[in-house]
Image 1 (cartoon, one colour):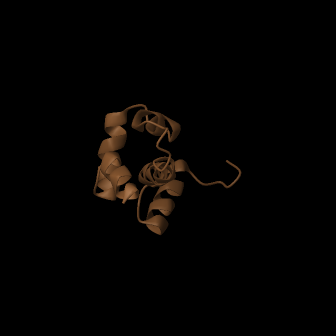
Image 2: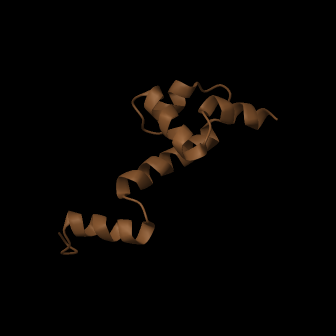
Image 3: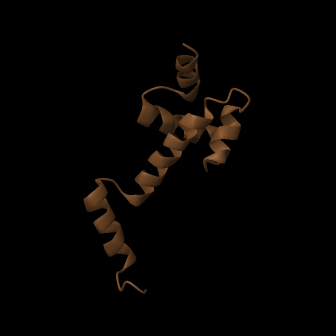
Length: 81
C-alpha cells in the first residue's frame, strides 16, 4: 500500500528482474538452505525438510532433485567423499 504498487505488478517486476517467480525463488532458497543442514549427520532428511519449510519429505526430495540433479541422500553421500 505504501509503495502504491499492486501485488501482481510487484510479482511481474520480480519475475522480470530475477527470471523466476517469487514462489520459485523461495523454493530454490529453501533448497539452498538445506545444503548446509545436510552436512549435519544427526539431522534426518525429514527434520531438514521441516526446518526449511516443507511439510512433506517427498515434496522436498522431488524439488531437491529438480534443482540439484540428485537426491538429498545422494548429496549426503557426495559430502562423505
